[in-house]
Image (cartoon, rainbow over all chains, first blue to last red; front, side):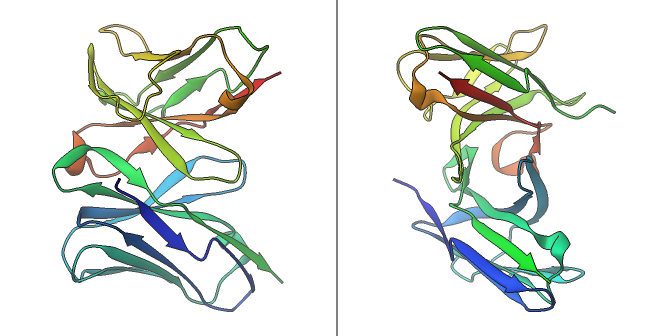
Length: 112
Length: 116
């Protein structure tokens, strides 16, 4: 079936270090979205990418959609303790546009 | 403008009982999605509904689970004869548009079901 895998599953960094999570789909996506879920909280939308090779930035966060529209990445520069949470990618598959399929998530822990 | 409202926030049931989870989408949103999240895991799609219609229930277990989104009132996810494996957080999300063109999903705070 259609699966979206993320690596790493978990990462622990010191404040100020960079962080990257990678998202890989078995088949082509029509778009990719990223969400952040704080511990005990609910997913909150960060961004959507639609075009092949698209790159978007939000302050210290950089999002990229692969050329083949099968993978994506989220890079955080100079992490802060407020970045703690689980980051999920999620995508719509071409031809099955009704549901958003979530990745397995990457849990980020940031310590001082 | 209130966000997506879910209730109850926490629900405890004994095995064999029924659980009813309610979701009121954001004002102006007519598309509702239900997701299940087991502890330390990702979000698993269950069902996508529009008013009075189930559009995609491919993620819904065939037995004991049902969902509706009536013309008036909230969307309801119903779990009959609950078992311990149903213990999870159930998130509802809404959007104003359909599918791939919907942009972001707006999530509620979730209903956390514990089955004893």
